[in-house]
Length: 372
Image 1 (cartoon, rainbow, N blue to C red):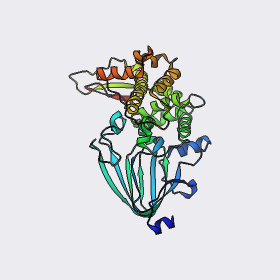
Image 2 (cartoon, rainbow, N blue to C red):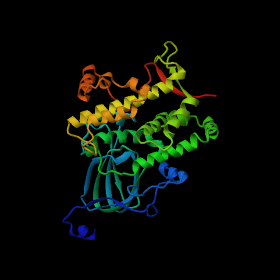
Image 3 (cartoon, one colour):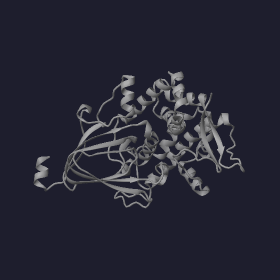
Image 4 (spheres, helix red, strand yellow):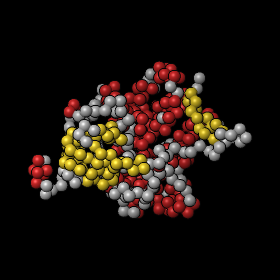
């Protein structure tokens, strides 16, 4: 490093040099995975979780999001870094298939009207940002940083978006892969199952005082079930959380005007389970559509062997016995139609695909209510 800095003839940019967690100052209160590892007694490798960075002056890293749906923290030890961060106008923007489409550029000259912030980091400064955050980094003076990645229950919706976005376009969107990341998600599911399902009475009593937690994390709880279907835990714990949610909560559609009544055609008792299935089916269809369209543009995920047809067959093989899910699966695909035929049919009919939770019907708002 000294030779590179002193010679000034080369530009170096060394990423994610593994460091032991004990050598890295970690921001407290953010990492749900750390709590999950401690509570379940199953620590996983620190590789990819805590690391150092070295970059010489003038090193730059074009716009990307960090891999595997994780948030990031950075502390500058030596030197000066200039971090450019994009913040979407809406929390749901990153759940759009076009979030990183034609309007996105790796030099951050984006056309999506995102807010762009420049942050100058000096020795001792910290920067913490959530998953799926596009950022561009310039080293103004040769720098050494400590940092790491984390998964937080507060930002799991963005974790979901990032995993889906990078699955189809990692060669455009990200720069590394952490093979331990799926295990971290499984441990969080296991921890929450122990906390919520195994200690049901205590958790429900706590929620009476803090009911907002379910309302703000409804999509997160349902995402746990999605994780269960894609990276199964030993005892179907993600689905246990979903079942617990359905037994103790329901979704009410509240009209925003007294003069008109909003309707989604569902009874209150069936609304939450029905929308949960629709949401999962919506995400799988969005993933397949997105995979096809990005592949057509020459953009790929981390493994180019995973084709749109391979994704289709994997979904159908995994969920063929789930009757509720299969009722939501497109008829053309169930009839052995090609992915291309289905995509063309969607485009012809103007069907939009999204990763975000479905919007409430016009004139109404969904509210989560805890059963007495």
